[in-house]
Length: 295
Length: 344
Image (cartoon, rainbow over all chains, first blue to last red; front, side, top):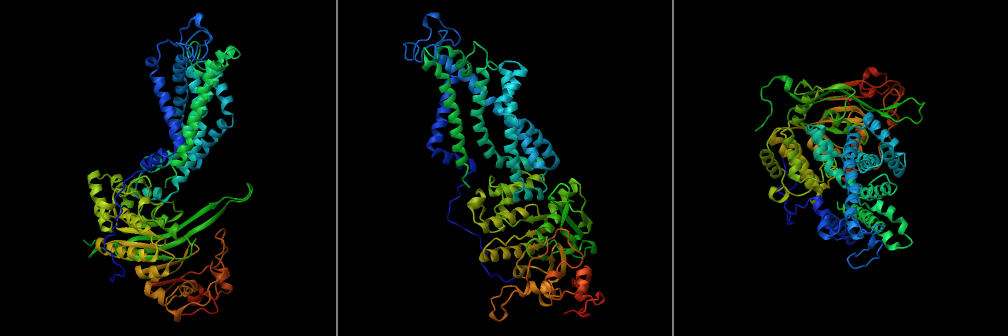
């Protein structure tokens, strides 16, 4: 046949970059000062909390009546002592362990369960979608704090029950976000093309759906970390989470209530920690969201 | 390495055959007491794609071209009809579909939406062969040789992501992806429509070369009459989900028998000032495909419409061995006042 146009191989002088999506997201995130500061704060906090026994010589649950409610800056107790004479810095470090676990563990569990349900609902559609989404709506209709209190209260006080209550509360929003992301991706032509290649649904979800919904779902999960920490601290505060004498930021806020007039700064310290962590997670989530708009 | 049948039985002369394909979609009703309505997207569509040929499907947007393509690929379930691959009816079970999809592949219109943005080009091409159980090494070699074949240097392009290359290059990747399973039939759904004219010409030439080298058969769907004429052996004209005219490219383009085809061809842009169209030969929009009235669906826009056109839908009339038209005008027995016994 006659050739109208030269069909020789197309060449360009752009070098082959081969930078994946996540690589580009990371590069963009690095330029976001706020997000990187928050990420650094969180990484430092996690490290400090893990290395607590090395960082402090005190036992978080042993105090002395002689050293009750020493102010911030006291020699040997840089952040003062609490109402039972225990070192505040030590209590905050050990308390951070429980508080951060209250943040991460329920979100991770809810991400697994809610993510799976949402992906199935979004990919299969139809009646399965209606069933999953309407059940989700029922749970979602309750205000999350009230629901967490109700579940934890019904199950009985204790750390495990509080974690379970948090997980149940966090599942519905994650189902929703995953479902809407999956529904969007499912309609794209590359999913149709994959089906036209003869791939089964599991392969399509694994190769083509998960990679493309991970971004928005992760952003949302990051913002849920702060919700989980705050509700977790709230449960401990009202006595449904961690129990004395173990250290936990919400519980510490509660026990230090009596010192609010004599040592307001010390009474506020656990609150400052909760605030800092939760704000950092929120700002990091915002930064991630804008970094993911790279395409 | 032509796969063209030589002396094989007649049953396999048709690479792909559609018999009475129909599909309607439910429309969400306005109130809960309203009867659910249906849109007939494709109704009673039949054609044969002969081995080694190209069948063009033309029509304006919304006429059911893409639905036909998706029905052929069995990406959506058909309401009625039958699809035959090399004379054998394609069953609707998973194993048969997987085997069918190895033989029949599709290239989509939107070159960027049809590539997964998280996968490199070679990963996208390798996906099909891997799904069909080929080894990674084999799939990779296949991907590289196909990239070379569609004119993209593998060393330069294979590790790129879809957003890093141009639309024309992406469509070449999509073509390579469709060829990765060594299919015998490729369906192109507006595959060149989104490309600019020079790139379009390159891709069309590539398609012609591939067809000859690999012994492929094509179904080529487009709204662009010039492109369809250039690439096709036979052409099907669709209007509101029905085939109105079907025949060889020479017959249909030179002696269009259906008023709709005549109007379409008259509205074709031309660089020849002598044959420029001065006014639109066709006015108005197609009627709503929801609950179509009886009669010919083109009648409201047709210059030749008469009473019979509004009452009865026209039957197919064979004008010659390679030309079929669905119009009362061409059927002397129809009762249309202007009906002709000889083709126009």
